[in-house]
Length: 295
Length: 248
Ligand SMILES: Nc1ncnc2c1ncn2[C@@H]1O[C@H](COP(=O)(O)OP(=O)(O)OP(=O)(O)O)[C@@H](O)[C@H]1O
Ligand SMILES: [Mg+2]
Image (cartoon, rainbow over all chains, first blue to last red; front, side, top):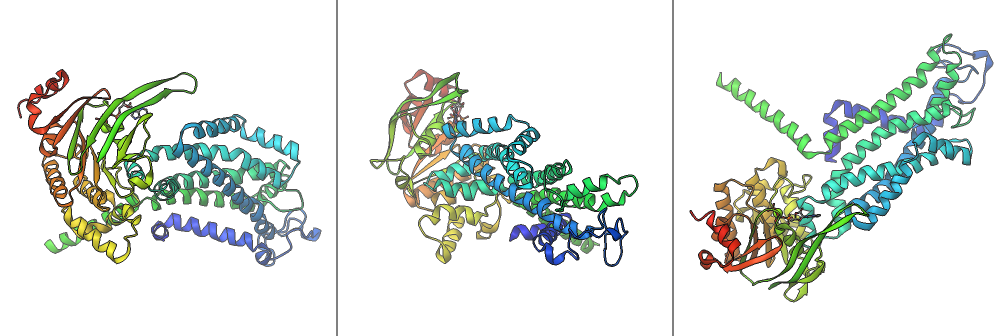
């Protein structure tokens, strides 16, 4: 609750969270918000410019671009978010285990991570697609398999750094349970690290999914996806560059919203940073008042 | 009664394959009686903090035992509410997400002393350590080092423990604040009849508060003396140690 209040004072953070919230809502209820059937071909409207009925115009098959954009939120944002969530969960669980308990568990988990991380991400994804076949689902599986190790490593480092602090030692002394210590003392501190890496890799994952669809390895036609819409627009890039605008901008806006949100979260989650700002503002106000009174 | 018996502790250094063990604590045995303040003096790196962690039961000795009234300290039920600690680094001794109230409340929660009674207890504790009750909604970064240390002391005594381990608890404070805290500790010890294990490298502070001091070197006990007999220590190392500050 306090965190949300902090976030509200930060204009960019507030705006980014609204953008993300609206995007998610649009995606979840896409069929309601989409003005037309996103897959309905209408050759008479080929490359039609924007009109009252088709706000963003029509593509090379005369399909409504706005509707395709909205439906495209599902694979481009929602599914990516889900894959991210799963890999962060796996990574956090293993990272906390390794960083908090150290010893043998740590060694085993870290060697597993090293093994996973020794394959370059794209090659691994291509290999998995090669085995499982083309499709959004398989790309998501590939993402989870690649990313968890990366998250586990970062979260472990973050946990290691905090697990030796005096207040954690103090909590251990009277016998507070390990789970409770992790939840109360380590999680809040590592959470800002987790939120930051998660939201920044959200950006890169959206771009990667779009990249795979752009290569034709992701979601299959005629379904809409932002990267694929870019790919389709590429064919007429020089004659009708405006077709690239809608999906391109959508990707840029959502990715930046996630990146800005991660920056703002870092400040909002840290009481030292957030209350410090408020205090200093109040103090400067009161000194101003004093100066006025002196006159 | 706190009983440390034949305790050894070593740490492994290096990687998986080429690791060597460093013996940090070697064959340490001593007793800290109820109501006593036992000082542990030694130079940096002699293993005082390591010994402190073993006493607190948050690390286990390689061999030997730490017993509290005959029960093994490694068991968390034995520790609960009976032993507490104050550490040196006031910057990291309170969770930055906790207010003073949350921090003091933490060990009390185990005893189900929350709610209105708990709040009154917190006010009382804060007054006892010389802080205004209005401090309870502050975050640690809004307190000075001395104030944080006072909060830590309030937190340590909140469950009424029999033993408190003070690991360089006053070393990072300036001299006048050190004396204030030492006086506070003396006062609290008198009121609650607690025992302290007071780890320090400052002989004067130890002389001020302790009943007995244990002189520690390279993970071993060099000598155990009463504070009154501090002037006539036997071992060469202890003599050398006191020579350097003979002026006091
Ligand atoms: N967790 C650990 N892993 C490996 N080595 C450790 C660990 N903790 C302490 N040591 C080693 O044990 C030795 C003693 O450390 P300790 O912190 O107990 O010293 P100290 O007497 O408290 O020193 P100081 O007065 O500076 O606090 C040091 O050489 C240190 O490197
Ligand atoms: Mg130490």
